[in-house]
Image 1 (cartoon, rainbow, N blue to C red):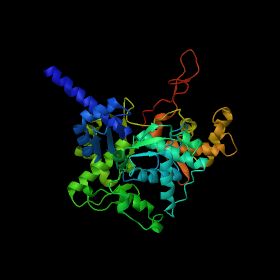
Image 2: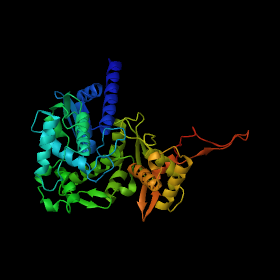
Image 3: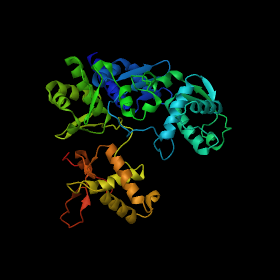
Amino acid sequence: MSTLANQLVAAEREDIARAIRLLLAKPLITERSDAAIFDIIRRRQEPLTKWFDYTCGWSLVVESRRGYARLLKIRHTLDSSRPARRLRSGRAPFDRRRYILLCVTAAELLAIPVTTIGLLAGRVVQAIAADPALPPFDTTSRTERMAFVDVLRLLESYGALQVLDGTTETFVDSEQAKVLYRVDATLLMRLPAAPIGPSSLAPAPDQITDRFDDLLHSLVRERRYGEAPTHTTTGAEQAPVSDTQRNLWLRHSILRRLFDDPVLYRDDLSDDEEAYLASPTGRQILRRAAEQAGFALEERAEGLLLIDPDALATNTTFPDDSSTARIAALLLLEEVTGPAGGTTPEQLSSAASDLLRRFPQWAKAYQSTEGAGRLADDACTVLADFHLIHRSAGRTLASPAAWRYRVTTTPPAATNAPATRSASDNTFEEEALW
């Protein structure tokens, strides 16, 4: 019995750790999309809910009968590095037009359990026409229909829309396409993670542009921490009314970023957060949380990093050869980590131009007059998203974690063989300096 009990405890720990990392990568998991993972979450609902609430202050909602689990991840810092993406080969991020259509379409879907793509498009046309602040939605335009299809396919991937008959993509070629949908209004209402409903703010239309950042921060205000948040250059900081609320805020503010970002630098922490992290209690909570989630914790002088040995906890990786910009990002890291004072935009553009010249059959979308500058900008966006670079005074500087990917070589052997990289010719070895 003792051996069996130990096996059951070990199995539960493994299930919980796996489910935590999968929910961090994909905060919405449906039974239809992944029945095995959803079954683990359903069975381990109670310990998972307690872990997310205690560690990060996030709510986990598991609807067993409706077949979905939703982790409501709230952040107090504005971050545009994880946009909604079009479910096509390029996976381009949503633009302003698609976000408008997404919001209006979701609002219209709440009132109709079943609809067709034509009827839904007509409702969206009327809703947008009633708002003078929005440009009209013209279904006779192929570009507009493509944007609408991108929105519908995203909602399909979430499970909020289910195609009963037809194919959504046919609407791109013809506005007379016949597609029938079933709407899951309950799941649709779970998609926003903001604790404050946008309708409760009700700003005047002419004030939205000037107050946009403040309105976004108001949407994620959490009353459990005390008074309204005040924002500093290092992030969002609450003004708590008690020591309990203060400690709760410090724990959640640190662990939310650690479990949600590629790396957490100590320079990005406030003095109070740094002190909490250095305290015996803070260190104990941090290490226990990482262990329970199945992460390996790296603690460095510059910051903290969680490593997932099974690569479950992220929806994107680096290095990665899935796009031209990601390949260029890895290649340009050598340029960024070289000079101590950082690199200028001209130097990065020159390095990108050299890459395009050396490999004329590669990156054809950038083989143009302004292509090198665009390639350098796109590569730097990738590096910034992974917190590997930062910008200061017009220069791009390497952040400490960037040194993990610096090129290293092995000494020549006694036979005078040429020096080689430590792995394959296309592999960058992690350095132990970070």
